[in-house]
Image 1 (cartoon, rainbow, N blue to C red):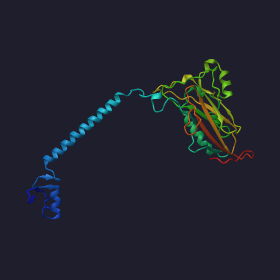
Image 2 (cartoon, one colour; image 1 turned 180 degrees about the vertical axis):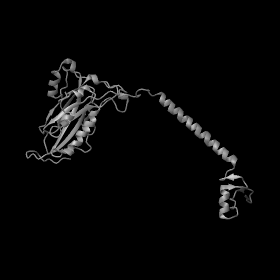
Image 3 (tube, rainbow, N blue to C red; image 1 turned 60 degrees about the vertical axis):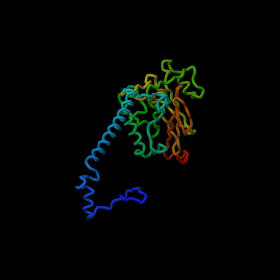
Image 4 (cartoon, one colour; image 1 turned 30 degrees about the vertical axis):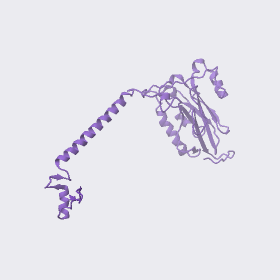
Length: 295
């Protein structure tokens, strides 16, 4: 410490203690004169450790209280927020099988290894349905006929599960004006006890003259709704759509729509809802077919 002429004192850094580099290094680790370790005496180390012990104990307690309060707000057997209150919402998505990673499901009728991938995928998918009577009684679009591949492939349309979602069914006497005529005739020809279903209609986006057939029926019966959370036996119903002799060497784009009063249909490709699209490209050697470039 040094003094100025005006009487004000100021602190200055003390010169480093004399000695070799090794001795200064060992003193920095443990100083015998001050009885300090890493620059702190046992008392100061006790103060530091006590502070951090109390700090992290309080922090851990606050975290435990927050998590405890969160878990008190959760239902033990079901999600807290459902339908409109949830992030999923109350408008179910529509999906199809088989899945394909490219933009278009593409295969050659002359190369069985290309379409066998999709047959194997569907075999695995339908293992889940092996105990379902409605599935085992079907005669077409099954593993026995390779799901129609390669000439008449079947696609399977489903409505994604939403907990506690209940379809609002159309009445046969009050069907929407934009519903396809063949589906209207199908519904009105059914017994009234079978008219309450989520209906599926499919159409081509381009006129490739592909005939669409529904060997399993055209709807998903009301017995499958609502889906109750935790029901491990529940299996989503499916509608099989068979493409009868689709055109070769050009894109075949199929759009399948689900029909219920509370399924919102948005035709936009940017924000689609209420439908699914399936793109197929079959390579063949038929001379009369188009050779449109696919993307």
